[in-house]
Amino acid sequence: MKADSKTLFFILTGICILVLLPFLGMTFFHTKGEPREAVVALSMIQYDNWILPINNGVDIPYKPPFFHWCIAVFSTLTGHVSEYTSRLPSAIALIAMILTCYRFYAPRSGKEIAFLTGLITLTNFEIHRAGINCRVDMVLTAFIVLTLFRFYQWYEHKQKGIPWLAILFMSGATLTKGPVGIILPCFVTGVFLLIKGAKFWRTVFSLMGFALLACILPSLWYIAAYQIGGDTFLSLAMEENFGRFMGKMSYASHENPWYYNVITVLAGFTPYTLLALFSLFFLPYGKLKTINFPHRWQHILTRIRQTDDVRLFSFLSFFLIFIFYCIPKSKRSVYLMPIYPFIAYFLSYYILWLIKKAPKALTVFRYTLSIISLLLLCTFAAVKIGWIPDSIFQGKHAAENIAYMNALKDLPIDLLTSILLILSFLSAIGSLTYSRLRNIYGSLAIIISLFLSLDGVYQPAVLNTKSDKTIAEEIKKIIPEGKIYSYISTDMMHFFTINFYNNDRIGEFNQPGMPATGYLLVGENDFKILEEKYGTQYKFIDIFNSHKRSCDTKDIVHLYTFETLAR
Image (cartoon, rainbow, N blue to C red; front, side):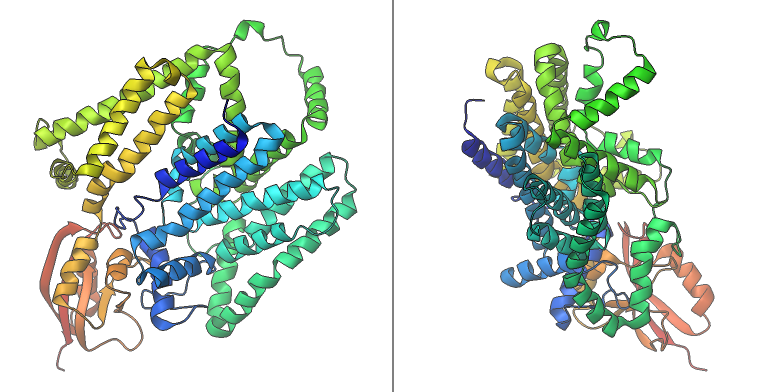
């Protein structure tokens, strides 16, 4: 590439800001995970409890507070907790991780590898989704990756001194989601140092010392939280951090087989998984030598010991973290996000190799992306014109699918929407016709334009229809202030979205000291259970039917008034 390293850094910064920041607040909360985190920050501000606030009426936070502190700080600056301020910590964490990746790899592996690594990390599905989400996982991922880079720099300096930034990042990771933020970086670094010939006990004691130092700041919060929450907090912390890994949780939590991790990485690295798949048809298989497995195994071990330090460290960061998360029963795609920058690093090398050895694979990839982009535009145009009838949707979710389609149909075409759609069209056409875009950067331009159109046009229209925000606003009109009760038969479930948009004033109905009168939020199916349990004690009057399934409970929401029956 002709641009110098500093210029590429600023270009990458601009792309990150353009892709991540403008549309954070356009999509309402539409899954239970986001408002569950955002309401913790809301309760921190409302009740001035920044250690262990109570939210959803009865809950203490399931995660340590660093992520929620960030939301609360941003929200205090803007005046209120919003979708934008709730997602901003994740976006900033992703930008910081990508730019640090670039600064780490550019002097060690070359500016083009570093630039491609940053862009691929930004534009795969899993990382992009997490970067615009109000969840703790992106912040945790950034802290882990930044810690690994600082540990490598400590190794470059002959393991002299104390890597204070690595310790600070591990403290931040632990305050974001728990001890895994210390365990993973120390585990990867320890194995790397031992492979490179470091003394065993020196390595163990050094990393143990750094781990203990990293525990100091989190321990201050854990002690303060225990003083407030007591054994209830301690049991929750032990279950979330150790019970989850050991498979001894009191409830089933994302239990999946080991190969689930393989599937989620392949799916999460979309669209680059397509490139890897297409490349299989264009590799020069005829040049491969016959494999002598005993000899080959010895050769592999020798190559591992002699390989470039940066590549070895990156490979171990990918491989060991992946293996680590195959052990517990609880598996989620977001757990594996710390390996994504390192996969992107090796994929960058593979792409540059394909440019020389199998360029047709990149051509097919670019054509596929162009067709997908143009088909998406054509489908949207067909919906706007009214060419797609409601009758194509059948089954029990037909009404919801029709509502999603009508949301797209009724979407106003303002200046921003027009710019994003035109950009998507031009990137697809330009990569097919303009010679300078007939390379990997043409494909990246299409991918970036696709994410922009999804985040700024298609996704808000569809997902805002799915959100419970409209229900929450209707309830707020009926009950402008005061306590609202809720009943859900499923354990650990709440009306998270409705509660957030009603400023955390929804509490539990079936708690000790049950109320005599009030308002009750309940789903249709849960009301049948409620009537069986409390029908002889209370009179319930239905005053509001949402005619819509909640995005949290998947049940049609009703609002009742209730009062105890005279005995």
